Each structure stands twice: as structure tokens, then as C-alpha cells.
Image 1: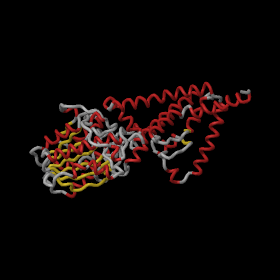
Image 2: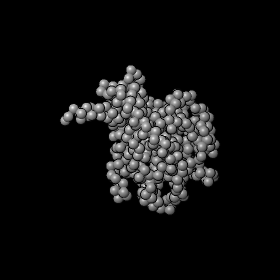
Image 3: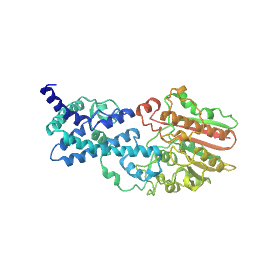
Image 4: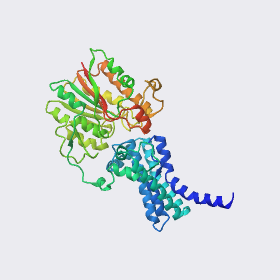
Length: 458
């Protein structure tokens, strides 16, 4: 190799280090999740320019901040309803989440350390001239791409289409989460009225019912694009003898936000811009339990996780529930894994026991075992072949489908064997199932609505 070629390669390595090193980890993660992150995050080039100057401490700090923004952007693409304030609030529940979620969170926390290492490599092995030249080159291309973007592309902050150059900070700002002070704003004191969900529609059309009412908010029950799969989940319900039960109506309703948003939609026709409802004083007076208390109903909530999650032990009482049952309030025969807590099959037995020989009892059941990551240790027996309906085995979609099938089959069996009688059942999804691989999610699920069913048990 002649000296001219050697010098050329030596010069080339500088922009390669600056361009590739900070991006490689996120390129791999995004490709694995089907998120189509831009190949080059131009923010790191700005950081590299600072690292090779006398302002290198500022460059190091900016690299860490950019990495944290990238992590949040990844989370927000998988869970689009999560905000910074929500993540800060959820940190205290870390010991209670599933092991797989804990491992994932810890793995993400290693990325800032990787960013520090990469920054030190850039500082040590890259010249100031090379970093600035590389920044100017890609900045020119980036600005050119902005100029040729359509209005729709410019206003769409999802970065789910293939881009070669982009800015994580731009994505972050467009989601209106750039103000970190919002994470520490005053706690909300009132719920916000919102459009009613499936349960309110049912009660408005059945104002004079004296039957028991069972409202089930089904964790991560979504609408498949393949109608055959939706029918398969409801198969046992649809086959119930008319003398046992009648499927009054099935359809879809809107959704917005995480599980707690689905709960507020169905229980209170309300919404909240914070997960922390412990400090809320007003807005609960019109919730279903409060209304049904006035009609002589016994109102009970039941959920397999701890009552400390999302402060449910506090706000369920404000919503009007006379009694709430959580994982810690009774001894359960088994413990399940998708999210630590009681098993839904055991909770269903408790529900049937609470309804036995009762009239005018309202039970609200928030399910648990169909929670991401859909751990198959919670599946008691094989019930479906995913491949037969075009779902790849051992994917999150397949696991969710099997656990949903188990829940609906158990519910139909409780109806058919007479464990549930004289009860109006409304079952509704809280939100579409979170699927880490975005390509897999878009292939299989609708993201604009969640399903519901109204079953009248005789």
C-alpha cells in the first residue's frame, strides 16, 4: 500500500468513527424492533464537534443527553402513550414489574455508559477538522431533505418510514415532551370529562337492569386485521347455548393511552394527563360505582396485581367501590408471571364466588395475565395453533393470542357450567397489545380501536 493510499485511509477513519460509532447500537436495536430509525442521528455529529474542541466536557454531556433522548424515543415508538413524567412516576414500581421488563430496562440503562465510552474514543482518535467537516457534510444533506419533505412527512414525527439522516431531538420536540419541567409540575386535582366507552353505552341502553353487572377491562385485547382471529378468540362465547347466554352486541370503541386511561374511559367517562391519581379530588363522583351505589348495588373491584400500582388502592375508593380486592388483600393459590400477581383463572373463580346467589352486584375486573410480555408460563394448556391463522409461533402476537384465548375460554366455561348466572357482562380492551417489534404489530393489529362484547347471562 503506497503512502498516499495509507494517508487517505487514515483521514477517512475519522469521519467514519464520528458517523458510525455513536449510531451503531441504536441502528441494531431499531432494526431488530422494526422501527426504521434514521441511519445517522445528526445530533451526535454536533456532539462530536464539541468533543474535539476545548468544549469537550459540554460535548460529553450532550452525548449523554442525546442518548437518553434516543432511549425515550425508542420507548415512545413501542408505547406511544408514555410521557417523560409517566416514566419518572413509574420508576418506583420497578421492583414489581416482570423480570423480562426489568432486564430490558437495565439493558437500556447501559446505553448512556456506552455513549460515554464512544465519546472518549471520538475525543482521543478524531481530529477537530474531520469532525467539523463531517458535521457540515451531513448537515447540508439533512437540511436538503427537510426542504424536499412533503407537508405530511414534515408533520409526522414517527420516524417509522426509512430515513438516512434524522435528528432524535427533532423527533423528541415534535412529541411536545421537550420541557422536562412538566415532569415535576403540580399534581392534577381533577379528572377531565371524555367520551364514554363501551360500558357507559351499555348502561345507558339498559337503565332499568336489576341483574348483576360484570365489567371486564381486558388487558391488551386488540382487534386483529384478520377477522378470522377475532372470531377465534370469541369462538366459545359465540357457541354458548341460548338458554345459557346471549351475545347482545359486539363491536369496537375508541382508546387513548395506557391501561389506566382505559379504566377511566370505562369507569368514569374521563381522562387524565397523569398516571398519579392519588391527589385527584374531583371528577370521580360520576363514575359507574358511585352511580350504581345510588341504585342499591354492591360495588366491588378486583385486580390480580398489587393495589399500589398506579395508586389503585386509593382512587378505586374515590370512584365509589365499596370493596377492592388486590394481590395483597387475600391469599391466592398461584402466582403468575406476565405481570407479577395473581392468575386470572384464579381471579375468575373469585369473581364467580362473589356473584353466586347475589343480585344487584357490580364487579369490575381488570385482567392481568395478558399483559406484555405475555409469558407462556401463565398458559395452562395449549389452545391454538398460531401458524394456522398466519401468526408466527413464539412471537409476542402469538403469546398474546394464546393467553386471550385462554381467558375467553375460561369465561365461557364459567357461564356454561352455571358459575355465572343472571349477569350482564361487558368485556372491553384497554388498549391494543404493546408489541415491541413495530413491523409485527402493524402487520397484525389495528391501532385505531379496541373490541368489546356485551353478553347477557340468563
